[in-house]
Length: 267
Ligand code: URA
Image (cartoon, rainbow, N blue to C red; front, side, top):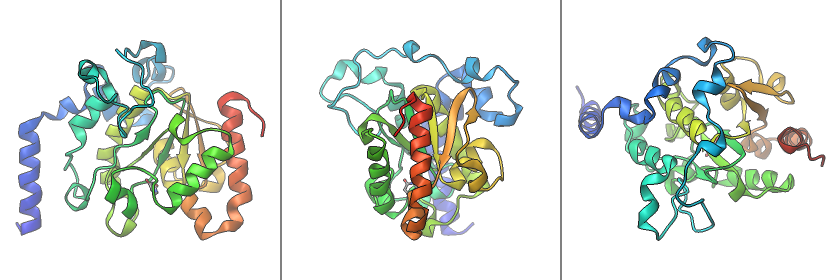
């Protein structure tokens, strides 16, 4: 065992001492669904098992403008801290070392935005800026994503933004299947809590991961997909638009499609 293995093993043991693995998922009825591959869920059962209606979420206080990033925790009112399921999830998982990325990350990037958002954007993984700040999509690509959201007459604060992976892969390499398998369990729980009306997968890897497909980005874009009873669309990643600005007209079509599928607004 080399020193990196030892460090990982020590972190793993200390995490296991703090919590049992099943505590990650908080709702016992979700655990089986979380471990089942999406494709194995019985048809028609998805909404009942994975998603509750938004009205079922009980907040002592509705989230408002004085929210902490990541979790929507309301600042300055001690009486409500135990009631926010997104915060509980964050507390349970932000020290994660279930894969090697837990040892190389600077910050865990849980997600950020309105915990009751109708639209959930899901990117691939944090980059260098996100790893420094602990927030998703804050670098150049993130600034472009904010503009894309504003272009369809929404505000970034209205939506929730997360990633498939919560920790930065070194050198921004593609996520490995075993990293996705572990980390996606946190994302699934976030989706259960937020209960979005529509999921917007940002880029090929996010779309392919969520939809369990190897289809190309071009064949996934511009279509309405179903993710356990929730609408899902796939859009160009803003990083791709920065590399190739010629894709911007097609990306605008993606964003108009998102707005149309969300609430029917034509832009
Ligand atoms: N790219 C992503 O996919 N996610 C981020 O958070 C930042 C860049």
